[in-house]
Image 1: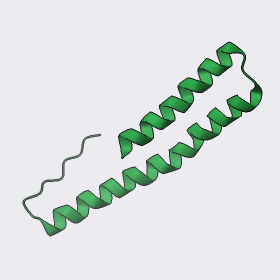
Image 2 (image 1 turned 180 degrees about the vertical axis):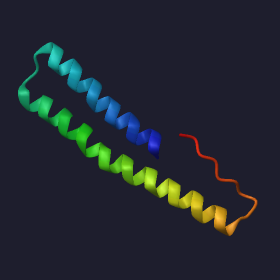
Image 3 (image 1 turned 60 degrees about the vertical axis):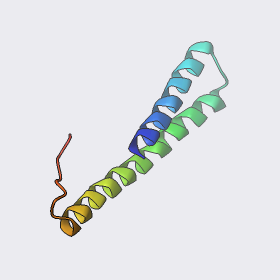
Length: 70
């Protein structure tokens, strides 16, 4: 789910930059900003959920290896 959250945040950011460069109404820019900012807590929640799931899986299945990728 993390790639979906990152894609959404990136899409709102790109749309905001395009709208800013084309002189779109200010309310559209605020909508893009709100969309990008609202995606951040969702992204953090998904990252935390994935970390907890990896830990639970490692405890219940000893053959499962947890590797840090960041």
